Every structure is written in structure tokens, then in C-alpha cells.
Image 1 (cartoon, each protein chain N blue to C red):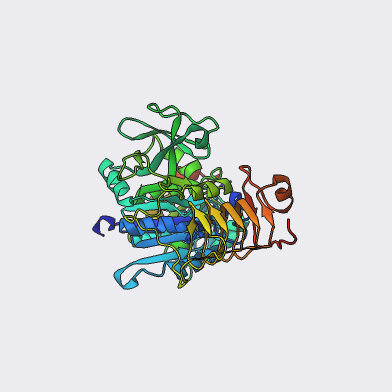
Image 2: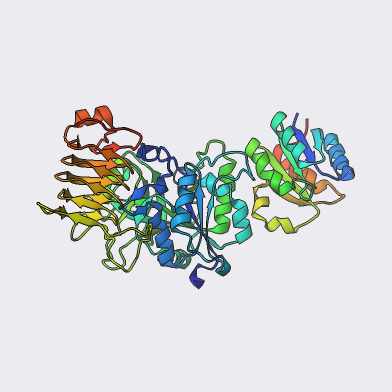
Length: 407
Length: 119
């Protein structure tokens, strides 16, 4: 605990998540269901808990009720009498009359909170990333370098790197160049097929952060964003270091995904599956805390034919009847009827798949009733007439549509 | 002509500063509380605000981010009898922090440095 004395931890969780529409039409992105029983923010919160951080501010804005509700239901475990807390803070309009204009502005608007806490360092996290990380190692690195700012970084394939901030570092890990979302990301000297990208996770010296935020707030040309404005303006002027995020066991670059759009949401689910998943929820050493519900175990019913389930995650309360499920993630209380086939599907809470229905490469929101013999994911044109279909060909079935007929 | 807003709840101090700034050739507006000051910032073109901290109602440190929220380019000098607020993060958003004195030379020099001389 003492390692985190003098540290204030802030999770930014206010973004609109437009590229995750329609999943975000009534929810904050960090409150979206992920991996059956989790919400995306559970990974960052669990990382805090596993790292020993028990004082956390969550800056919310868009769809804040969904987030507050989740924090109340699943994360009401801090002990205020020990100085522990998770507080959710929407724009309070006590310093300025406006919404959060960007990531940097969300912290600027809460300067008073930093003034009251007077931390030495501020750890800034994001509520929409999937990864396991010990923030203590990053804090140690930051302090050992005497850095003003440390940016967590991980190699990403060059063609994907243009979605991120790309770092150029010297042999001592000092950042000597930063490009936000470059169309042609430069490769790493030792590995030209990869670029070193910012994970959007920062440790700041508190006083440096305050001065940078104030200067940024006064700049009318700024978009008040860490990646676009604050970080590039600090490189070369302040001591900025990159912390290489590595798997503590293999020493290979760690698994980290920004769930920024629907195809990434879908792909990150497939990473959970298989005997040796790319991202393992079953390690045991780094528990991820999800929603705990008093539901009965999953039940498989096979009167004439067995239920066939392969490479899937099945949550409590699910009932599967003589169905075939493969490479799928089922949230609690999903029901699948006789003869139905479900392949590479993400089914949220309480989804009902009727008898003989066929579902492939589809995300289905909570409570949707798929009628018997209905098919989704087999005819892209037909799907696109009814539902959003992503660039990667993933169908999304929101729960504000009624499915009728046999498709 | 450069315009300055003087915000102070004490009449004597506010009038003294206003008078001296007019003599320096600046156009001067005044407010005896932060809420009126915010209204003026919103409605009038201004170059600089001289802002007291301890005032009844909204204090200067609460008013400062609101002033910058309305006009981010406006220069602000905190002018207070107390030095303790200098440590407050909230005060760091000001362009200068000056301890009140009957001798206004330091204040005048700072105003000139920030927005140039009057008229």
C-alpha cells in the first residue's frame, strides 16, 4: 500500500464510443458487457485492485447512469473508513459551465480534487481497455527515471498502429518523438514491422500535469486531448519516458486491446477462447472481478442428442437444449433451443435462441428473442437490411428491434 | 485602448487600483463581487482582470476557472493580501500572483508586462 502513497488514480470513462454504436446508444463504453460476465471497465478496475490501488476516481460523462449502476452493483467493495474509495465523477460544472471537452479537459475540470489530495504522482487510466497490468511496476519505472511523464507502450503491427499514438524512444526509453494517429506509422528500429504505440496509460508528476493542463485549457486551438495535445507538446520539453508493457511471466509484450470499435470488440472475445487463449481469464494469479450473481450453474439438456459445446465460455444460468455452440461467449441466462447452431457469437444476458435457429459471427444484445429457424450471419445482404454489419462482417443485433418470421 | 476589470470587495482598494490604472491610460471597469465580474467578462471585451481572492460569495479562486472558461485568452492577476493561496493548484491558472500593497508599482509593472501600456 505504501508504494501508492502520494498517488491519485483516475480512470477516464466518459467517451461516447461512437464507433461501438449501437452497443453504446444507451450505455457508456466502459459499461458494455464483455467476456460474458464482465463490463469493459472491470479489467482496469481489477488491475487497480490487483496492483494494490484502492483509491480510484472514475470520470464519467456519456451514459453515466449505466456506469454508476455497474460500480454500485459490482464494485461496492472499498472501505471508506480505511481511506478507500471508487468515486464516479460526472462534469460537476463547479469550475466551468461545460461538459468535458476532451480527455485532458476532464482532468482539468477536476483540478480542485488534485488540489485537495496533493498527490506526488497521478496515474491516468482508460476505462475501455482489456489487459492485465501491474501499475506498481510502471510507477517504480517512472520514479527510477525521475520522469515528468511516463507513457505505457506496447508494440503493435504497423498497419494497425495508425489508430494510436506512436512513440519514438532512445536506448534509455526516453521518448524523443510522438505522432498521434499517423497515416504511415514508423516501424521500431529493431522490428520494422511493428510500431511502439501508446496505451493511453500515463503516470504524471502531479505538478507538471497541473501546469500542462492549465496551459492547454488556455489554448483555443487545442482539442484538450492527451494524445493529440498534451503528450506531443511535452516531448522534447519535459522528461517523457516510455514504459514497455510486458507479460510478467514470458517477458513478451503484454496483451492489450483498445476496444475502440465493433470489430475490435468481437476480435477481443475470440482472444478469450481455446485451450491456450491469447488472453487467459483462467490464470488465477490476476483475478478479474466481474458481476457476481446468485444464479444456478449452466445446464445442458440432451434427451435425444447431446449438447455440443466447443471453445466457448458459458455463464451461469444458461440453459442449452440439444444445441451446437462453438467459439462463442454466452452471458448469464442465455437459452438455446433444440437443434440451434451458434458459432462465433457473443450473446448478452437473457438472449433466447429459438429451435433450429442458426447464428454466426453475431453480437446479440441482452434480452433479444431470436425466433425458431431464424438465421443471422449467413447472408450478408439480408443481414445488412435489418442490422448493422461491421466492416469485418460481424452482425450486431440491438435489443430495440423485433425479429419476426423465419428470416 | 486596453481594458482592465478590477474585482475587489473592498471599496477603498478597488477604487485606488481603478484610479491608478486609469492614470496609466487603461480603460477600467470594476466589480465588487465575483458574480458581477463574470457577467462583465461575458459581455465586455477585456484584456486583463485584477482579481481579489477572499470575497464574500464566490471567491477569486472559484471565479478564475470560470473567467477562463468564458474567455480563455484573458490575462488574470490574482491580487491578494495572503500568500497561502500561491500553493493552491487553482491559483496556478493565473498569469501572476501579487501580494496586495499600498504601493501599486509591482501591480502596474505586471499589467504592463502582460498587456502592454495603456492608450
